[in-house]
Length: 264
Image 1: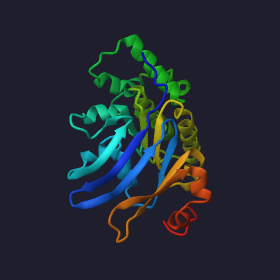
Image 2 (image 1 turned 90 degrees about the vertical axis):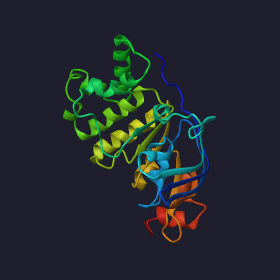
Image 3 (image 1 turned 180 degrees about the horizontal axis):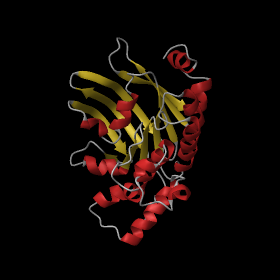
């Protein structure tokens, strides 16, 4: 079986996102670099999670969602005619805020779930190899290798989140999206997730939403600051740059105010 070796870039042009008449995200133009961790920061309501979910069409699962603009995965328009949202979500995986292992499935079956849903049949030996590789990649193999048949819900919160990361990477996506993946975890588990993110960028392009400024500064290469638009209607991208520059010498005063704790 093939092994993912590098992520892909994501180019966003004139992106506007709507829920019914509500204009949730305004005019985003940005290129997300391959094999780097891009953190999305900003106060609640600024559209960063909506933007994140638009990168694999997850936001469309909310009634009334609509998109204008273009999102390219390398040269593939994920909103183009004939683009299959299910295929897009296989290429661009997602890890959610709260760990969400499938409650009735074993650890093994949780990791294998996406592969079993694939139209391409995977042989048992290959499946075993992928499950082990994915659990090793999530730094979980040594903790669970003797209880793969036990329920995934029996793991600790931090282990469950790493199991969800293993599940997301098992289908070998090009990009991995993470929506506050450590916000429900204790400090030790949070640090383990951050260290894992740093390792995973060797193989994947990673975009992570976080409210934790220290986490963004520790775990990301690039930081994008979103803010609520004037009048409080939706949000927009204010500035994106290297994480070091955003936290030490940003171009915009509103970025400086946010990262220094003056608002947000």
